[in-house]
Image (cartoon, rainbow, N blue to C red):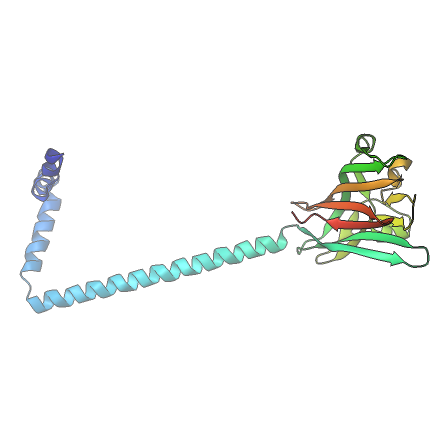
Length: 243
């Protein structure tokens, strides 16, 4: 590679410039001659001015990039605020001492600044284990899965025996009634599906465990909740999957 270094040496490059563009070479030569003829104090002053100009330009560029980054962050924040988003706040249990009934609800929130007008909670998967009369646990999921997906009703729709999609204003929260069961042996697990669901889906007897996957639809990135239902001492317990 020695020949390449020789070819690109300053003297060879200067010779090439003189050959290819004589006017440019003449201007550069004149400028260098003029600069070399100046007193040392003037050269030092010009060097200081040049250094100051470089500092000013660098500072201006840094300020411009800082403003640009700040504007991009602000745009990203605004886009995030106005991006449709549903957040699941938590799982709640209600207990009615009069009839020993336990009800479980998911609380959801419109975590954006746009109105969501067509929301729906759907059970998309179910794994159901029942205990037969001999106390053996068997997987009964298949006949229930064939009817999925099925929509769940909100607590308000349940109270007025209604159904269908629900609206969420910006920042508004609503509760989706998931399931309920009375304490005691042989009581049915009631999953709060829409009225058009098959009867056998709404009342399930002799469960041991039940796992539900629920999609909360209505936003650009719908959350999915995984719930684990289990009977302990003939009482229904429901927990959320933390993963």
